[in-house]
Length: 323
Image (cartoon, rainbow, N blue to C red; front, side):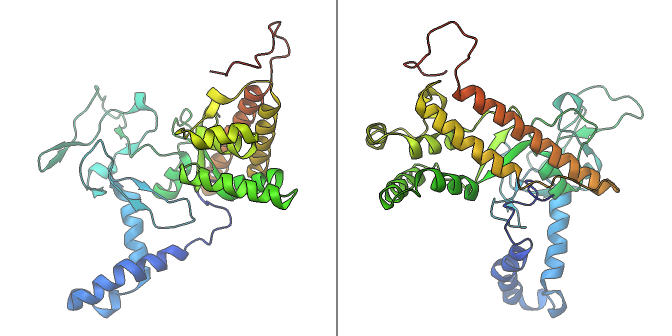
């Protein structure tokens, strides 16, 4: 799973945050409640076991992980559900998950203080009852629930995660290392980018490979000319994205080159060969292959986005944005 979203970022120390979360949030509660929690229960081992039960059996609350190597998920609540969560529901948790909407035939419903489910379609005798555990990628399904839908059609929630450290490393090498003046200029632009929400722990690329506007804008801001940057800095704009990306220009080629280098370094983090002797190894290989496939589609997207169509007979679109 090296390089995949299951172990993210790759240089994080796995497991360290379980102990930290126990010490910060759980141990004080146990100490305050006194006899409710005997001394033999006040340890991170049982906390980790209880957390694994919640992670693998709960519904509704978003069990998403922060992109900092943490092994403790953020237990938020989906806005559209408007109920607290996650919820542990016996019997209902026996229904399996499908990432493909057309294959699902039931879902959890709320009615006041009651939870129930009914069939959304006719279910034949012996047919599997399928529901949705949430909008999870294959990597998230494997980490949280311990399985991957290898035989199903491609999960529409699959994604590639590009780490901030890789992006900033490329920007530093390309635009900040030539002179002290260049370093100061890049630092100023990165500071403004951070203030406008462009510097994220990770950048998500969906299954179609389309580059996220925040990442595209960050690279554009880092590499644009002085006049363009001054205009951007004085404006209230946050994301530029494709609307400001002019095909065939020198700036487009610079942006494309930087993003391609980011993708190359991201791909280098994946192992080249994987053992497939067990089911766990096959699931790991599936997750890796899915993410590498997205990465290669992202590479094709960037090349198409940054270059002119050499077969086109039209004049180069040097003055119109790509929509």
